[in-house]
Image (cartoon, rainbow, N blue to C red; front, side, top):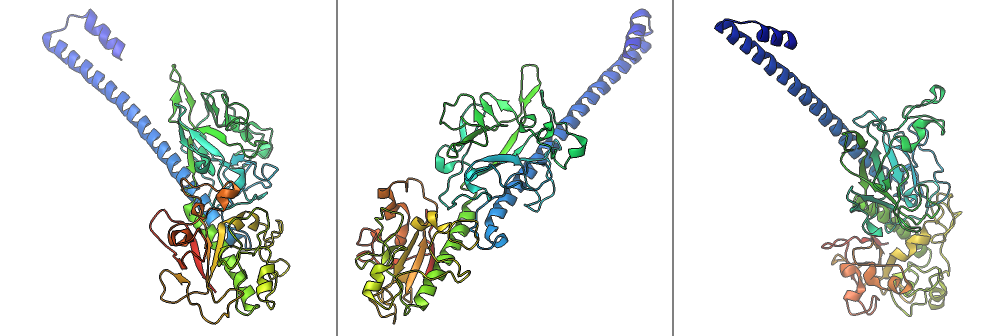
Length: 481
């Protein structure tokens, strides 16, 4: 049409009115053509916005579902501590595939296990199912020792190689959810028809099962493997997932869509991280779960030993077993060995009683998983749990009436308190024996007896404890009995 009009105008001598009409007609066509191009671009932009919004929404929902799973883990699996996350889905059917990674502590990757999370098969704006990376220390099978002090093993950088998540080990991400975006480059997402699943294939050899066909490399960082090509041996990103060195962090890159000089998309992954900060409500529930188990066992012991509690252990422990030889101190960690308790009151037992939830196991005795009610988790938690006992409820007391220990200012005195230290705060370290003996690295505000007149002991420190305080504060405190 445009060519024929140009031909007519150029070859014929048109009257003035006809020339004006032709020019108007040409202008109309040009305007309509421009409008069409603009509308096409606007529709494309609108579609892109919708796709981005879909991706953002499903990533956020997946993150919340994972945190909710960890938050209620003990309710779903009675006898187990809170905080664990499900293994990834490696077959594309939405179900977790445990055991994942083969050994405890090994970081793993696969698709989001939406069945375990009670979700539909979430898809990003490109219609692809989400991928999922899980720090080995937080996976639920095989379990590692997990406390609110446990670090993640995932680092995220941007395209400029600046670390955006995980600048320190304590801030490394616990898990990642990744939107793979549409097919790009040499990726192949085909599958064998007989093995097709909702999100991929049940056949490990199929292209639809391989992370490299979904996740890209940008610079030195390979999201399909969690590696950094520039890393030296022993540094984060030097081993692909699942790493043989379980202590090594893996490295990922998150960036807006990247195109090459020809305008071809070469990177379109989008990542959302679950950080320790995001996990704060989970850590609180973990501390609560531990405190309630400890309280139950302490009360059971007192109920069978004249209403009195054993001596705590001193803070300066050097071996795996904590001794109650505290020289009359009423604050410390929970002792494994109760010989001094019986010396000071021969009627008191020198050992902890069976767990009332399952009397096959003994309170505070670390017996190994998978027995759900065994105390295997206590191995790592024991250094983070403290008790303070009123002077009348120790082995040399009468268990008649509390006279000195206050919680939140009273007005009633308490026989004792259990304090579970939260995740270590900034500037605190709990790695060496000396650091573990320093109560400043564990408790805050009035819960730190060193803030009284003593070096973290009662006596000579004060007998006042609190359940809440100004920030930073993350202790969990519960009264005895």
